[in-house]
Image (cartoon, rainbow, N blue to C red; front, side):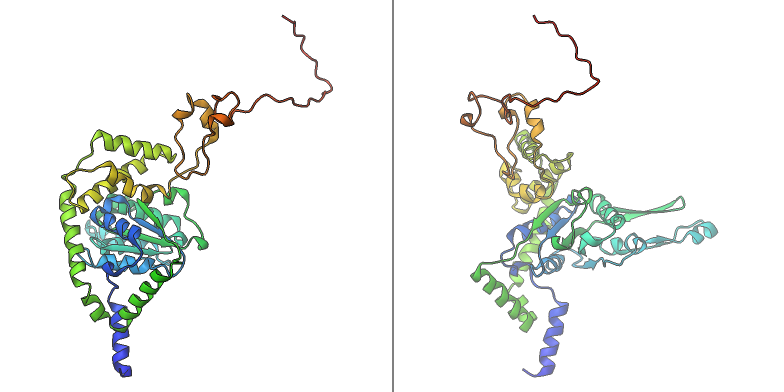
Length: 356
């Protein structure tokens, strides 16, 4: 292979995306991204992991499966105007008409808005993009003048936890989260490296080998979007979602809503006739991993019996067995009476207590 041919193929590899179907060892991430593609109203996917775990590769691969097939990158140095767009106030004052210059949110409509290192963005930008991702609408207001436009996109934010965390108020607003880890399985690492080398060597030929699977993904997303409105939730599914969210001690009700929508999207992806508790179980971790709290032990004593306090899904603590509690049926966290030292304080007049 001469130098010109090799350079041309390297350039093609940079322009062409790695196929979504060719991702290896990323099943939880692939599921989360597909669910967000089926129902963008989930609020996006936050992908956390160390460097080199294919976070950006997966985001770009998903974009090819969507109608517009585009991915819009939000750079770290972007201003709020570049993200949401701007209004020409002078035109409003002069002509009475609104002249809107679209931003990145408008450009990302029906595609993917990819934010690398989202944890390093200013909070104001994160608030704006999360609002648009959840509502599907971007509204720009300046000096009493406003303009709104559709902004339905799949939000994918990636972050390396070593470089800082998102504020809890912001991380909770991402619908789903997937935590990636370094791969220490030799065979899986070999498969990943071989696939990447083959793609870099000849991206056109590599992609051709996955063309049928890619087309199947496109069709499955299209069919799932049509199926989505036909699916509802019965009382058993609602009860199961409530139990999981209470068990995880989440704040508010966002987790319940996202879990129901994610379970419905999964059922639609599989063309199921109904949303079941099994669908809920398969999406629960992605919904709860960034919302789960360790239950406050002080609240345990206020409940009627140990069975009224659910176990934390993190299993960082557990209720003691009956043999661990004095008498066999005591309260969680109960401590038997113990003598305590006292000290005389000058100037304090003791109260006279009559003995009964």
